Length: 90
Image 1: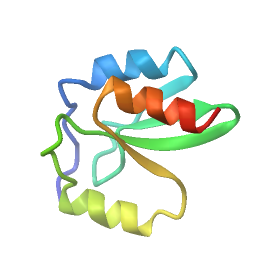
Image 2: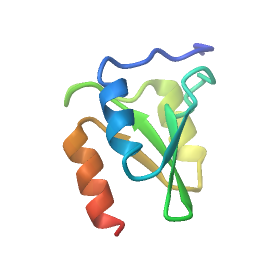
Image 3: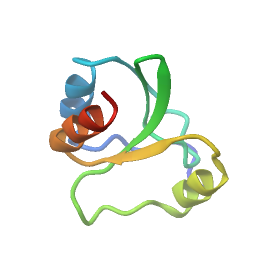
Image 4: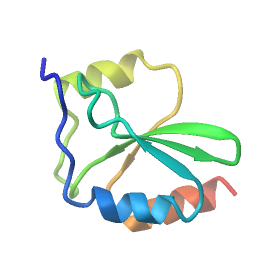
């Protein structure tokens, strides 16, 4: 089990897009399958995993974490995914 996760190259762009709508807190240093961000939007907190590209897959640790988590976890790959998320949650 890897202790700390790496930050994807597109994370800064995605965080900037999210911050136009709510608050983000990085969880990247937590590692062990924990998603990259907490995003607060309209009084609800969402866990978000940033992936770079369509081929990027969840690690075994992430699959285990996501399977055990009973709350909302989203995979975000692009700024368009951010806009789609915001549109779905207006």
